[in-house]
Length: 376
Image 1 (cartoon, rainbow, N blue to C red):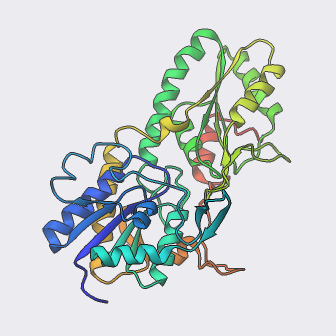
Image 2 (cartoon, rainbow, N blue to C red):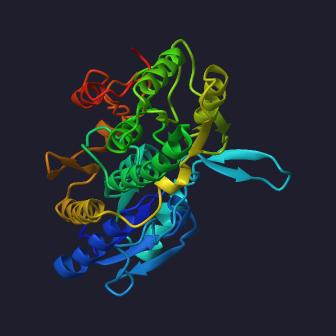
């Protein structure tokens, strides 16, 4: 591998708090420890395709660590290996335009990439590695569903937003004797609902890993009423589904790598409970993008910095085609293929999504303190 003198950073997929800490960590360590230049491509892989970037240096990253989102902006629709092109006649076709990205990198003298993102973004990182570009990945998701790492930055901040919202919702639920249904993100996993719901004193938590029976949820509300607790808080993951039922699909975005958009199951449950419960108003709240934004917590700032420095060190030491990860309070690394798979038909190497264990200690803790999952 030729010496690395200039590095490009990409932030792809959904935004989250802590991204700027990663960018800051890479840039500062590159300056102080290695003397290499750094640029940041704007709007994810789209910036790599359009050669749209900004120079990153000590001045440009000063004071960004406390900001949510990403200073580079992001995109979750631009897979350069299957890029959507609209022709003059209005027709649409998909092409592999990754060679354009390689030409842009060569033009600017960029020797390697550090790619920060989730499974879709890291899949393209794997594919650029296969084209001969030294790449190191950094895991990013508020859903905590990426395999191979205990946690990613953004999750802790999102939990804080959920708990803060539940604290506020409790006061109005208590004041009006209401049943409040609060929907949170998480895609196909229930980590946000589970940990946020427990810490936010939810009475019922509905997650994808434990299909629910709404009759059991109603019994929980009645049980609380009988004790004199005339209000209930129900936290619902967007991927929750009833027993023998399906997830609620909010939308299908055809030009996105993650075309299926979940959401709205909280409203469905609210409507159903309104017909099943006579003596309570049932109200619905969807926290939606409030979970993504905001000032990063101390944990996410520090984790982001650690990820950034570790990714740079790994890259400079020749650790191509890998992703840094957080395991047991230490930062290590794993091959990208173990995270996103090889892409081969019938493969068995992909770790897949990281699911909540219905028999795990966290779920058992919740049940031990009286929280219902609608299953028993």
